[in-house]
Length: 422
Image (cartoon, rainbow, N blue to C red; front, side, top):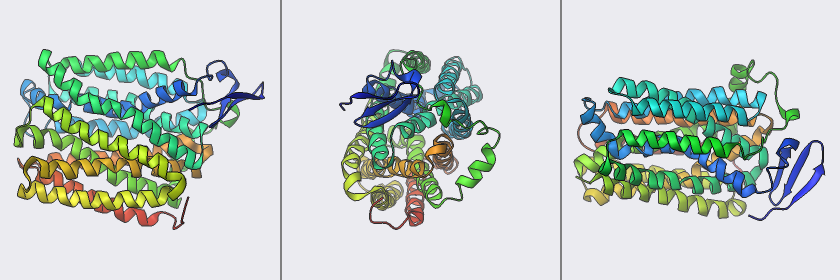
């Protein structure tokens, strides 16, 4: 992505002409390489996935080492999502008032503290408590990276850039389970959380190379004080409501897969932790490919049509995974293929639903991003918790949850505006 910086207002802003980026004046000296900014934003977006994906292969070993009962380790996923959802609502309002970069820095620090706490834990309740701290910090990076994209881009271009960022950041969950499996082969699961501390430290250093994207004249001095009323008002908008529903139910299915796949693959189908990483990586590869396709199709087809197409495929894939989970049809391949297909629809659903919602409220991008994110990860709480509560020793409950959430995601697309192209 080539870009040439042109001075538009020496005292207030600096603009990148291709694509158009408007930044505060204090960003001028560090905004000469938009690719670097996008790389850091992609890393921040990846915090939500690496916090969980990296230790997925270690969950069976953690259950043994921490003497946990059936389904207890799955609760570390759903509990994490509680902190992640609520944290986004807090950081979104704060960032609209004081800017993006300071809240992100505080969030990274909390992420590092929570990761270190998990590494030092000796029981499941301790892991759960520190995962809440870790999640609260990680949520700042995810929600504010999306808001920063909206600070810099608009409309279909924002959807394209979100797809590009998701494609880049998908490398993290692609290699996360592989790295986690390899760390288990040379040491204990504690090493995984110490690695997360190191990733947080590197990201903190990189953050100081990124400019503040929210100019002071665009900040809202009352954002925190009026946060609750504004979140309620945002939910009155049809596009926000549609994005919240579609994204929330899709994430419910996606996190059901994250929470339930280690048991389904490793215990039921006797897959090694290392091979599990490869299977999980195929799902991430599908997400990357679909996001690349989405970035090309958005200008031609429009965001809303792509969201509906993705929801239809997700509903069909969810139903197929339920059949395979309860009947054993097709063995490992019969279960894995629809799970991978469902995951791939992230590329058509997530970036487009977020971009459409943020485009409706550019002046409240932080709050809108936080609200959409809270619904997404709130759905993740529901999906991962249901897999844990319905666990019966088979992949059936995993498939059932994904079938129900895929159908609900499809139903929510009826709230989208009926336009040929957005």
